[in-house]
Each structure stands twice: as structure tokens, then as C-alpha cells.
Length: 148
Image (cartoon, rainbow, N blue to C red):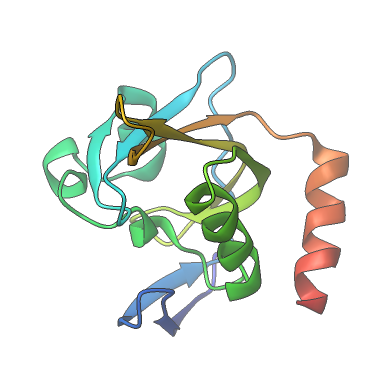
């Protein structure tokens, strides 16, 4: 039997929301990449079908929402601060992320977030590509995130 709990999240943007979390892992879809595109504030502008399928949200529920709709409470704020600091400086960020599905289950990804620039060099959006994670690296990330 899967247990669940309610958790209030305090997000990077200062907002809060209550989520249901279970201990059920959703397996990453073998051979697929999860892709999304956001504006500079993290609002979803595009989510591919793999993103829709694994998250449990419809495309209509995702588009226009903050990327943090997938924020799992086990992910420390420090990990996201590091990501934002990196991408806002115009650099590519790589890391392991535990995401929350609509039904409260979770899945791990190896994420790459790439800034997009206009012709004047100004950041105008971010593309995020998620791949199947390495089980060994997930274990390392779990241990690291407990210390942050």
C-alpha cells in the first residue's frame, strides 16, 4: 500500500502551495527525452508529450504554469538557487532532479537547462531537456540533497 502525506512547499519565487506526496516511484520512459521551454521567469510555454505523459498533467494544465509545478518537497531550495544563478548568468546547468507527478508519485531525471538568447545577447527563455538518470548518481544526489 502506498502512503501519502500533505506538504506545504515554499517555492523560490516566494509562493507556497500544498502538494500530496507518495512514496511511489514512476519509472522514467525508456528511450524518451522530456523537453520543456519556459520564459525567463520559469513559466511553461511548451511541454512535449513525454513531459505530459510522465507528469500526469494534461498539456493544457501545464502551459502557463510555473515549471515548479513539478517541485518535489525532497528537493532543497539550494539546488534550485544554484540552477537559477547558473542559467541567469547565461551558462548551461546540469543536475539531478526529483520531480513530483500530479498523482503524488515521483521520478528522477538528469536535467540540462540551456538559456536562449536574442540577437543582442539578452536571455529570452530557457530550454530544459531531461534524460534517464543514472541510478548511482541518483543515490549520490539523494545523499547530497539531505545535507543542503
